[in-house]
Figure (tube, chains in turn blue, purple):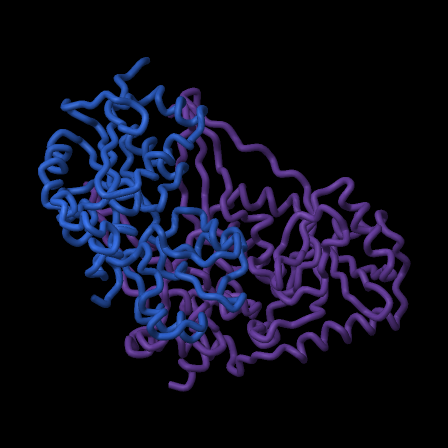
Length: 251
Length: 342
């Protein structure tokens, strides 16, 4: 009963491509196992072939930062049955959105080359700012198990979902001692879960690398970061911009 | 009912002997907190714990539990549970397990829960240290713990071991027990009474009065908006609660995309999407969309809705929700007092 394999392609925009690299970290068993069911038709990290044909699932990494990228995104959308924003840059703007709060980044990073035309970019945005996205898988990088589950769901025609509850849920289920009960701060209260909460379990506050839940209580977050986490008002306000710059209320 | 005495220095060898044949789950230290965990050795056991992060229900109703395995050939059971001893359970958690026994039996008998429950021997223990947020002495005080098989009380020089069931009696052959003297039994009684006397937080109204007044406050949106203003909908008050029993069921496919496992995982009514339901054709609706509605629902469940079924509130005063809530808005003592003040 061999069904035709699902055609899968990977594309990248403004990103480190680490989420694609993370896929190659799935290991032989899982990666080759998935290849029984999917056919990868474009994936710059592992093959040189590209495709201009119809795609079943397009995984797009990276944020939308240049008008010049819009036609390419639109072309992918037109050819793909399912478009998945793959990783935090594509899903939320991710770490790139830090630039949205800066003005001197071109000179700072590129010095004398700052005026090169390919650096002509605007605010970092999720790819949903340019095209319709069917599903966003956040994470910096993406979670391997979540990726495998979502591929399964698509293969079986089940609507894939990512959690819309905070990281606190996953910390509690594994009985991690709360950072706030160790005199620390943490963004897990508003951070989108799905990672399994590895950072607080290792004694590191959650930085919300998967962005925030749909309805984060930001006023309460500021208050607990100051009152329970011991942060100054400025630090409480800028805290978490690393991955959630696009979520923050302040300009 | 028989009562025995185990000298202090004999406890480790008793627990070690149990460990040799049976899975024993007891309180152990985790940083400056405590958790119930499978004991690898007797010296990990910390009967001086105040309260654990998660309640011991996880040994019977695990955070994630496989329900069945499926394949193109059909489905199969996930196996029968192995016997286990839940050692060192405080009385409030025994009361909570009694409530779960009721929830998982009433209407539909939940075999996954009941099989695990049947395979478990519960040795309750006295409370040696009391958490500052505990209010177990004044909530549902008429409801007594029933589901344990034995009760171990720390007194000067050792432990009084009170037997309540055959399962509890079956354990004494593994330790150097002797019959307890009248004085030892009196000391145990006094130690348990002292734990109630020293319980720091209090609810001063009767279960009936609280249930009535909380229900009457259902439509007072300004009260619920005020109480839930800082709520993150993180569900910590659910996930740490010993009487919460809601779960979500998901199918997970194996790599072959043909077989898989059906699992259930704890859910919580404070979570944003808990009450999101399908309207068909991809549409959904959330019938408790606001955090204040979800916050109110939990309070109703714990103080009112289940009282007739349980003979008391669905709360045992362990204080875990108060301890775990970062903005500190989940404490039933404060919520009830706020509502009772009008």
